[in-house]
Length: 147
Image (cartoon, rainbow, N blue to C red; front, side):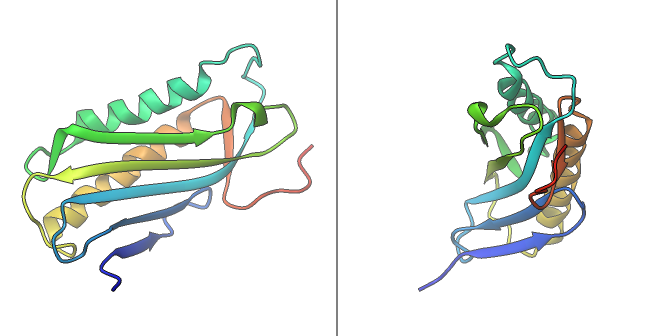
């Protein structure tokens, strides 16, 4: 019995974006998922191993600071950024997956306007953080001819 629900957003040419819930009947949490292929764009020093942590912190901070507390609980934000550090090399792409899990304050229906507006707002904020992060360039699909 499949009770989950997933919606795909095509708002950005650099990211595959989905959001959803694992239980559409009793929604307790919502997840946002961003995937992309990334490559270094020249600003990154390969000896700086904290770059992934910086990006994760930037994302978590912008979500925390802009979260509507009447919709989601601020104390229960889980940000999981998966980028293989070993894949961060010049002229090479690596896969990025970002999951942000949010827990509801109230039991909103998945299609309720207040919930969808908050999700849309958070997606745009996260997109902006990713795009403005100066160390990486993002692409929706793997580019085999990276020079």
